[in-house]
Image (tube, rainbow, N blue to C red):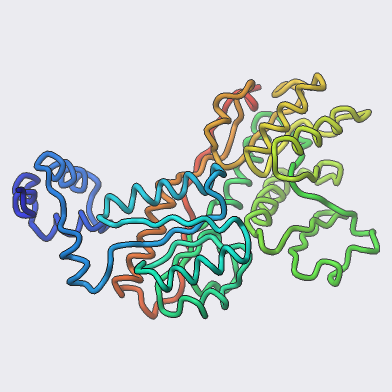
Length: 363
């Protein structure tokens, strides 16, 4: 049976370097990491996980909790975390919260009663203070925490940056009347638009309009801010008729854009959709009414789900680097578990992304 020293000899590095790399240490050059992992595979080396975690007083198991395993984004994230954890010799327990307060509280209770060394969690219904009271000192990384004063390390999707670049992309292909699908707007002259009427929500003003977003879903707020920032950069004045509110599913997006297309005048020549499901539904809704994508209306989505490559036309999108997200989440969690970052302020890391242009914006 191959040993750690055998791997070190084959890779031409020290035994300690092999140990660090196989534990997921990120300080080494990519070429060195690849050489060590290749040597381990060739020799059939498997780290003695049980001995290592017992020596360290840990179990080598982490919990991952997402709101829905059937939804594309959390499913891909959970899979990426599982792959990255396996490379580091860790095991993963994945739980689904069903996007409910009860499910999130059950996850916290199970995590503290189980043998997980730490948790990667994407809560929407429970507060940071509630989480802290349940898990105590157990390390946790919060997925999608955009709060001003975070108390947990977090990794977030590039919601502001990606949305801004998505709208910049629409502008680059000639769009000047760019709609946003998936969020509502009221005019600021509406007597109901007051601070009191939106308590607990985020209100964002643009010209004579006020967007109202769910304060618990702050990635929506960030995507809206990115959209408005790109318009402002290009000196494009926002028109309230460009905001199209609908539920975040295929059918709602299809119906909303059908209504738009059947109006006397289609007010937009580009459409930023808050996610890819909306983009696919919007493309179909416009096509149903004889509005051509991208010649009449160019469309871009967000998230990079696989289906966007197979629609007609295929959909341009902001693609999230799930592997990078997983690496950053596990790096943060490992540092807390190992004690390296104990006492340090909470960190927030942004996952990498890229714009993928497809037929829906090829003019």
